[in-house]
Amino acid sequence: MYRIKINDFNLDHSLSCGQVFRWEKKDWWTGIVNGAIVRAKQEDGELIVESSFHKELIVDYFRLDDDIQQIYASIGRDEKIASLINKYRGLRLIRQDPWECLVTYMCSSNNTIWNITNSIRRMCECFGNEIEKGFYSFPTPQALSCASLCDMSQCRLGFRAPRVLKIANIVAKGEFDLYGIKDLSYRKGREELMKIEGVGNKIADCVLLFAFGKLESFPVDTHIEQIMERYYGFNFKGPKSRKRDEMAEFARNYFGKYCGYAQEYLYLEDLG
DNA sequence: CTCCAGGCTTACG
DNA sequence: CGTAAGCATGGA
Image (cartoon, rainbow, N blue to C red):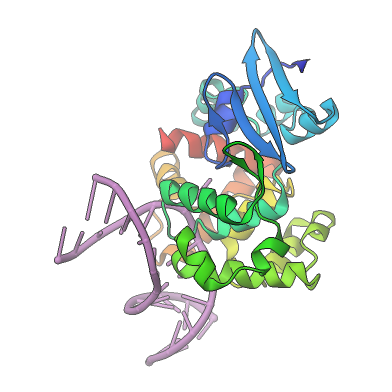
């Protein structure tokens, strides 16, 4: 167990803003990072962590070395976003594992958060390893590539199941360099991710933001769409897909290179 | 019953 | 090219 002194970090906001799906709060927050249990809680401006990992990995996972003051100054373009920064101060992006992030957000398409959470939990129980009683690792590409559609049916992914199995097979065979995307630019990484069946611009943006730390990514979903309409008077008439493209472009120009952080504050506000 | 949920693919003009 | 239906599943 160790303590990390850290300003402008809020563990509750960071873990309950919808970016991660597998952390649970009792007294401590409990989650699985890189296949091992991590417990964390926050007391008196200190982050208390119980984990077999070194402190550096935890700092990296919670992005505690981000210069959040500079980010706030950069995205704080008006009093609306400034009030959200104030309201949810300390919400930080989390550096997720790319594979888990990819599969999780592939499951998110046309789905509810409740359904996504349950599907992911079932996948971990069926195809992951039990690390500790009741806690399972996220299934590796290899583990999923051994599964059949029939095996997967109990996870209730619906039409997403064959897409997940397909990319699991491709990654397991080493035919898609998922982890190599971290070295690509935002645009190039997006191009690569969108070659995956079941990954369009929104899911690619989520993976680029939550796993690869491309902060210029601004995923637009129904929640962001609604709050951007409320906050910034977006009333683009036309098909949904074009409307979302316009919003993302606007946000990149308006909030700047850290717009991914702005997205998370807007998203949490819309979750309520 | 119908509609919608952190969208994407396919097909049609 | 750009746009609309269809898609599993489950809750409101």
